Image 1: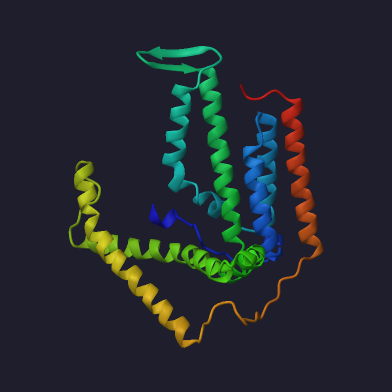
Image 2: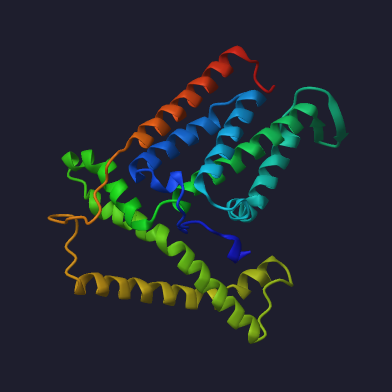
Length: 271
């Protein structure tokens, strides 16, 4: 299961999404989140899904890799869907037992929200799949630069966010190694009740915290040895420039968002 978590990983490819300016990709990600939550009917949601499929095709990444990120959140999707099945009424009654009642409206809402969550995760993952940590740091710093007037340490904030995102795959790999080592010593993480499983995680958490603090100390030492002084006076080898493809992608995304809003007005909602 740990190997299925791909959050924070970057996969280079010669695709259109990879060549977009990272600042524009951050803006497009925000627009995508709006596109996911704006639709109130199936036509709007299907349009958002079609737009996501187009983005996946333009990313040049294999579909197996894209949908691999869904597996870790399947329990969350199932839990959310079950709650909507039993707590959303409307439509025809299909099943009734004690306090549990299943209506057609609950099933439709569960499917609608499940698809919405899946689209949200996949679309947001495209940002880290197609953007290197260095480019993401520069983009965050550029976009947050107006906050400098409030005396906020924009560069340090962007650096911390990017380092945290970058080390997610490293910590996942470290956790997998520790679990394999503990299993080789006879540890059992799958049998027994809830409390027994929680106690079995202690031999994993302690060395994981030690490894995380050691890596943080080594990273701080390496940055200090390279005379890192923050963003003041810092130059960049690669300058960010908005190209025609960036403005075109923004225009297409805004057009899709506007069309989704119009569809909400003209078409009745799901329930």
